[in-house]
Length: 219
Image (cartoon, rainbow, N blue to C red; front, side, top):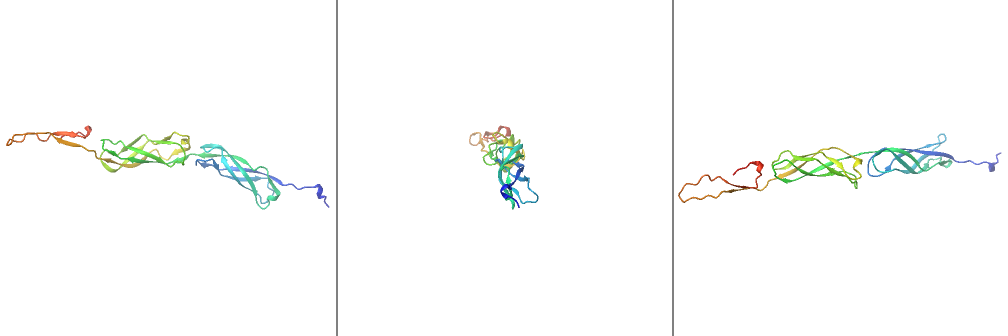
């Protein structure tokens, strides 16, 4: 016989460990992970479950600390086990997010050159602060037209605390815009004659208003 008053059975203590997953920057410090246990006896049905995990901050970086909290035990045999800790740590990376920048062309009146103006938009995470910019935008030719192609180059991002979390999908973009006609006038020069006389020559001169000097238009 056994004197059960002199004996006690204690739970087996198991230690949790996590493997944190890398992720693409998404504007928050939420992390995902898998949890394993050390110390489970044989084929006992005991697993690590539950809990949430966070990176030490939301920004891009390598080997960033990830902390999981609220870990629990699950399985048919958990009555015989105690979790050594409800927290565990690991490291993982947050990698840069691809930023797509699009351009919208701004219509302009004819000015004899191909210089264009565009506005830029992007698919940043809502609330992030950064500034897209470009170095040049140009029509294919300077002539009046509707829906004319505009090529944009030298796109970059800067400014704000979040620019470093992104990489540009492309430094160029294309859009369309209109070049509209401008008003110009030809005012014939005044001429006079005595009735019955021949017309004075020439009668094909005049004054130009609104024409661009570079277009070399004459009256």
